[in-house]
Image (tube, rainbow, N blue to C red):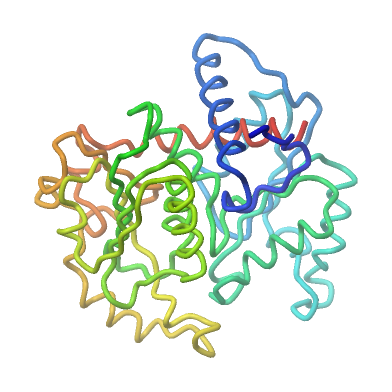
Length: 347
């Protein structure tokens, strides 16, 4: 299949791209990373500007985008949503505090070449899907590509970095077993975007996906159905289980991470119910990735996490700092994957 040009495309979820298009992005990321190591410059986005609009705090995302734009010859302009007229959709505006998304998107489009946005959680009242709605409203009005730096449904840039890391370690990922698992944390305020996106990207490349979670931590059924459809089309398999131990057996890679229960978030309930959610969390404190769990997997099983992790809760120090951990490869690869995304969509 011939890959269409990605120029001008929004990058909101990997599920809106074909396998061939995702492979093109990954191959360019691999090339850019190798050539950077060899000292080669890539002025692909000279005099281009990417606006980085953050409703949430960041370490890896902000710095990987800023460094990536610098390496491509362009400029990243950081915008803190609380220090500008906060972009808001119709019906959520406050006089002289906010500015309608439609207006912000058109203004920024007239000055720059791309808009990247991170929005989930408190800024949208923990209403599941509202952050994604904001991104799509920006995309509706913008005349430049809109890149998702993480919303409450998807984290596509993290997924691309994760797949880039797996390809570096294994070459062909087809036939490998990856476990995407819930893990305990005392913090309930995390989006479900990472597990959604990891399973989404894995479903394009023939991987055996095992989704492990305690009862009450099921994910968006519509996204799970898309993952299953991809598996049927591209090979591999999908399995869901409520046993972390069974999931880890003979795994090639494990990705244990905390996320909230959608059962206690709007629109399934009128308002976020973190008190009830805490009881569900506390009942599953034993869901931790420790040395015992890793021994159930293959000896060379990769430990993955998007970071930041909650050490001592989601994972033990011995695992995350151990020889099988690739978390810092994933972190570095955020920059390389995003450089490829920007180069292909913003040129």
